[in-house]
Image (cartoon, rainbow, N blue to C red; front, top):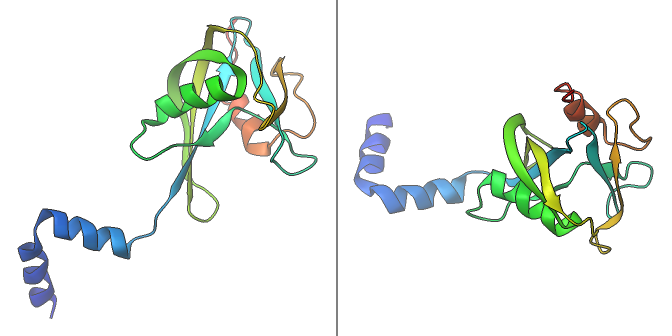
Length: 152
């Protein structure tokens, strides 16, 4: 039976194989987060409107769109949520998350722009020292902020 299945699989070839895999495998959303720091080592935190009450503070985050590089997602989400421009650095987090979500996080540095929050998604945006983070900050985001020492 295994030989028969292997023979059929080899005969299907590229596009049909991909379609079979697509139909039989789990689909994932990719949540992408940016740990945005300024020249002073402060981190950008947002109070998100759609997040649970009491846990609304977090890093700029959003979902990748189909075909988008995850570093481009960081740049896009930060710009959409805050009006700021960032340069994306190293990958600091990658794991399968809740249910069918993959979580990805990158370090990012502020390049410029004017802080203008998206009032539909964001209630407030502020820069914080890693030693003085607000209550109501997502636990994972607190860990990401402390995963690398702030620059001198």
